[in-house]
Length: 321
Figure 1: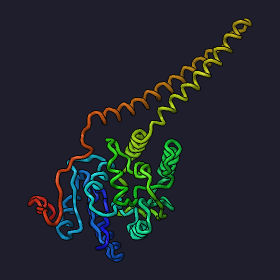
Figure 2 (figure 1 turned 90 degrees about the vertical axis):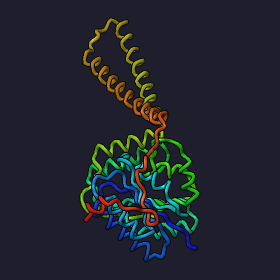
Figure 3 (figure 1 turned 45 degrees about the horizontal axis):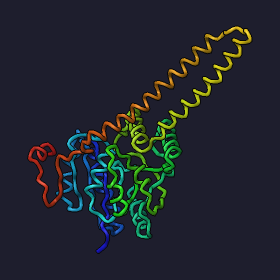
Figure 4 (figure 1 turned 180 degrees about the vertical axis):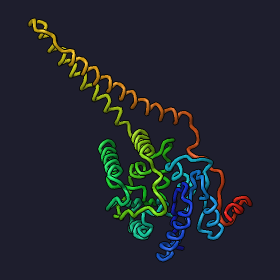
């Protein structure tokens, strides 16, 4: 029997995009002759995304649906899909069709050639504004420099073999960062280049605030390097203070005038800014520690849907009609 390919896609307020995605994915994988299952994870959508997912599960036994009890965020939704995937190999992909499903057959072939992790890297950033492109590049390069895990031009669109997935699921931390941890685990890996397409069906739901929060969570959950940077900057300020103190003492001994209110004010402003930023960094890590100590589940499943066991609520059917 040919290997089973599990395709995991988080869904949040996609509406008609669910139908487009399922149709496109089935077309690509069907033409490639791949045996597959599609795991759609509804991350607390407020529209009819779950109704559409249920309908697809009833129409096609290769489609499975998982509905989270509320909006937990993309990372927990991806994790839920990975934990429920049954395939010999798992592909994570966005459902808005910016990640081209046509690249999946090539990724599967790379796996058959011996790779355990196949990463899709961007040739372009279609549909992103200037700020989005610069912000993404800055984060990826900063993350790569601080963690030595290469995320330059990386995406969440990637394939993991069953051994690599099992290793990933062993990681116990509450705050997960799929793009980083799937690189951190190692294993034999390769890349495929992809062209990022325009989003189909509306604008992106990622706001600047949400992207900034994701970046902060990704860094603080993956590396303690920002804490070390605070220490290094503190040492630099200590050295500067010693030099400034020595200069002041020498001028006093020589009877020189001590001008310097602007200098003192500037030093206080700079040091005060650094102290507040340092406290903010420490606060982020304390928040991560608090989350880990609480030990709450990373997500909660409200309902599952598959052809063999699904029962469509009457009210959902009525609403859909």
